[in-house]
Image 1 (cartoon, rainbow, N blue to C red):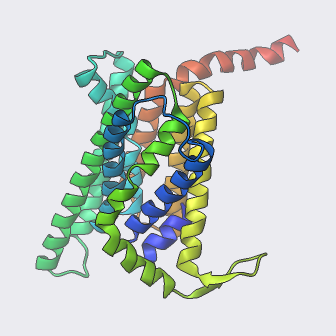
Image 2: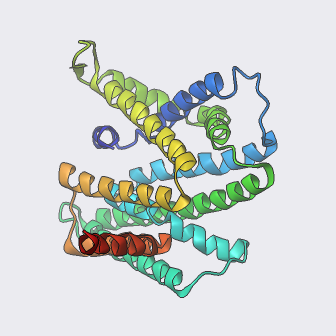
Amino acid sequence: LVFLLHACRQFPGCGNIVTFSQFLFIAVEGFIFEANFGRKRPAIPIRYYFIMVAMFFTVSVVNNYALNLNIAMPLHMIFRSGSLIASMALGIIILKKRYSIFKYTSIALVSLGIFTCTFMSAKQVASDSSLNEEDGLQVFLWWLLGVAALTFALLMSARMGIFQEMLYKQFGKHSKEALFYNHALPLPGFLLLAPNIYHHAVLFSQSELFQVPVIGLTLPIMWFYLLMNVITQYVCIRGVFILTTECTSLTVTLVVTLRKFVSLIFSILYFHNPFTAWHWLGTTFVFVGTLMYTEVWNSLGPFLARWRKRPKEE
């Protein structure tokens, strides 16, 4: 997160080169260790991966491009933290699922939290004193477009999750294979973004030089940020994959939710992003609502009951 935020602060439009680098690294790693240099046949027919990839590529590009539309990183992260709720809503519509009142309440909480943060961010953008009325209106309209882009990406991501769920039910779970194809197949699509990627590669090369600690290698600092972001992102994705094989889905969901929340708090404190009491209230709604969705309280209840009995037994 730190390396991504540093890169975005210096070059706000660098999202495409960051995404391309992540896709390329994971695709090369998967081609070697998962696809066995192309000799291993996929367990899921390739045509389904093309559909999944179209969704995945669209979500990644739209999420990154939203940062160019006056969307602050904290608001960006809050929107993405609502992915569970978007998935529930589409599950009701597409899969005809039904949930308890407890979970419907979580939908209301998260929706209220996102609305609160969105509304307060809109007031901050509209009241920017450094802009005249005409420029302020233009910036505000671009911000509205950014919110629309985040909403679209949120719903598309939820739809992709439902599509994956249906595929895994039909063909079995192949998360590592899906990770490889989701990053390898979209690579030709980056040709459409080649001018932007090349432009930022030139800008990265012109950034100030930085000497890497320990190894003493000197390179432009933006390339260092990019390299470290790619490596840490890879570790994060692999970590989630390992977690899904070792823990229940509830534990995985809770860990990922807490990671998003900690990242949000860290970005605010480390980069001094403007965050009002209303933003904190909205963030609390999102966090509590997500925990309600995962039913973590039901899991904590038996644990706390056993913990309270220990002193009496001793």
